[in-house]
Amino acid sequence: MKGIIEGFLKFHSDAYPKRADLFKNLATKQNPRTLFISCSDSRLVPELVTQHEPGGLFVIRNAGNIVPSYGPEPGGVSASVEYAITALKVTDVVICGHSDCGAMTAIANCTCMDHMPAVGSWLRYADSARVVNEAHKHASDSERVASMVRENVIAQIENIKTHPSIRLALSENRLALHGWVYDIESGDIDALDGVTNEFVSLATHTEVRAYPISPLAVAV
Image: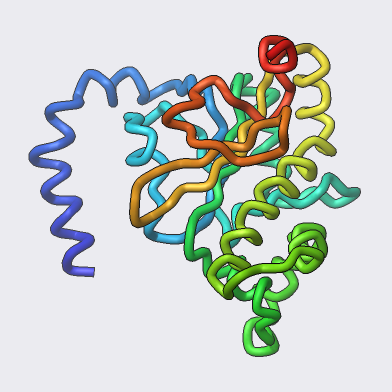
């Protein structure tokens, strides 16, 4: 905790004064344009990766960047999604997985979760991705995990489309969905192309998105 407190003191004396006007504007309102759903992993920091200041992203983080399908008893993720879409009216949703994901490694390797029953129960929301991943042949354990990370992003894109607020926003053409995979070692991001259902480099395909498929992309 010493390092945490020292960090706060440095923020309060150095970083905060330099952004005083920003925090003054944020004191009573927020206007993020993007809902960013990522893993809880400490190595992935959405604001750092996207170079966004406070107030720029509405962030949901959990083990495995999971979005359960909408159900009769919505949980915290569902409530946060609904708030972002309905109240904040974000225009983009990013679901971002990452390399070396512990949650996806556990699923891909069929790790026994008896010692962490809550985690095991939560990861069942990625079962559809596991089924698809197990149908493929993989050259190595690392490739199996990397594939699981990608399949999970695709599965969570499908899950979030079951949420009423998302369906409405998509039908009104005021929302785009993006599926990303962040590589911790290189800093690169691969993005899901909704046309081909393949992941491509975001650095060279900056307009790519998972859904809805852009007319331009279809024409090409």
